[in-house]
Length: 180
Length: 239
Image 1 (cartoon, rainbow over the protein chains, first blue to last red):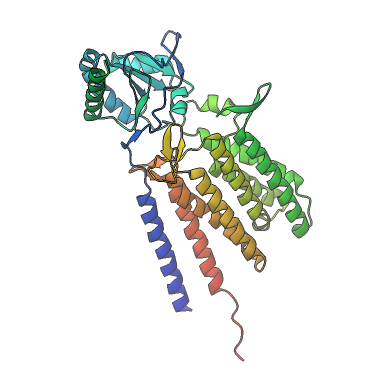
Image 2: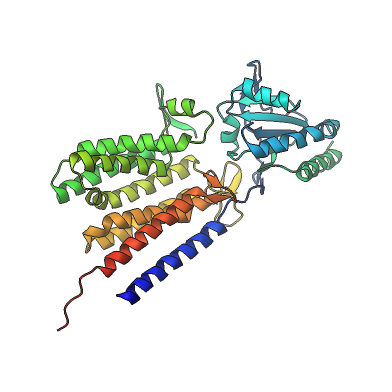
């Protein structure tokens, strides 16, 4: 009986090791940029401002727009927003708009957190997660880079870095020089 | 997800249609198998299991959402998370064993193949409707969904479910008593193999998918169960 029991333990051990290796091998690596391969045009997605005014994405806004999907309960978002705030002047100089799209929170509570954190970037409120659904970007934070033609250039999951934003800014600036 | 049919407040998508087909198939097939093998009328049990699946699926789907109340109140939502649905139906089954003397293992044995087939149909419905998306992937067999090339994770799920159904159906021809354990094992294998490719999934620190860990635990439990059953099998006396 003992060899059978030993073989059984060995089998479970093999299952455990193979299973763990598989889990680690297929883990979700946060922060990997996802390129919108189809060069899809941004869909019309609606949100609202703090005073309840309805706003929506504009396909041909004439300027690149960075939509940042965030929530105040999300620690990486709280770390990311000050970085974006710091980059705001250089982005504005390059005629790039940044819009923070809050996902699912009570607007007044989110606005209070922004005020406490001295974040002054424009904010939209999306209580129904319309942006997350439209871009399949349910990981927070997620950042959607849309060029001036309304084409989604990049959807970035996880906390976006200064380097990524600066790279996109430079890319858009080069593109503007080539095709004014 | 675009609705195919709109009936007042009810909006049926291609996934909704597949889900209705899946439930109808599951119900009819399970009813026939249970009635034939257990000589009992299972309609009430199956009805409560469907309701349990719906409630469990909805709860699973909205846990973690910041708008839990609003999401739960969205009674029209047909999309629900499969693990939650299974747990909801299983909870009903445990209650049914306690109060109505239904045998959990016997019922699981009978509904194993119908449930896996229903899962496959539901997964195909998700693929058609473009929901439950896979992770981004650059490969020839990747499928473009929501503007990004992705793992066709819904098809993986359907494939694993169909293979598991075939294995169990073949096995049950000779050994009925272990169908329930095989079914539970198939659920675990599906979570373990497939959930890692899903874009939206509960993540633990390090990007580990919670559903995969649950799947591994289930597979280990079933593996141990089979091992013990093998040890305790009667040995034919030597001539």
